[in-house]
Length: 233
Image (tube, one colour):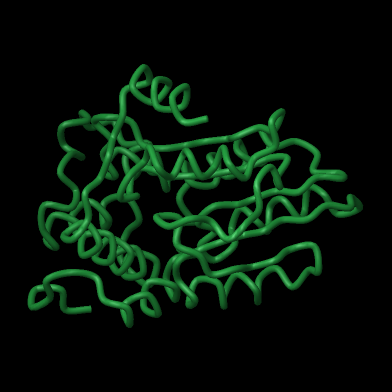
């Protein structure tokens, strides 16, 4: 992907992104986060779940493994049909309903439908977090549960690479990971080494950098996020 001549992320770029997206499973912090979220969801027996921005189905797959014998239903939504194609291949289970949907718009579900909603690293990249949260609470049961993970103020992807490789270098060494393609390669090579794994992670990094060119990201302090959640219902 030669991003030097591109102004942003285009529709066809999602196919490239989807091909390499699962390389994230090799990152220790990413795997630990997925397992933590699955643990927070607990048993899904008898429940209806909305998984927001499911990507290629990495969390979905974990939930299936943890609930092999349970009867439940997951509606897993994502904006990218390319991501959804891979998710369907990974999780061919009748309890999972993969649907293309844009969470910046009204969700295609009736009021009070879901027992639980899970949203991981998605809210920060939406046009209006307030409106998105309002939609979450609209489709969530009155006594339902929202599990929300979103990057906090000061979030840096380079620190994930540092945690993955256990580097003892100071945090400042790992900052500004996406300032340039050369900077990305430097840090990714140090954390993952050279070879196919590093090249796939470079593609992920390039995709994220291109997405950020036309996006307004929202990072919150804990109190700010709590205030948004209290205001949303």
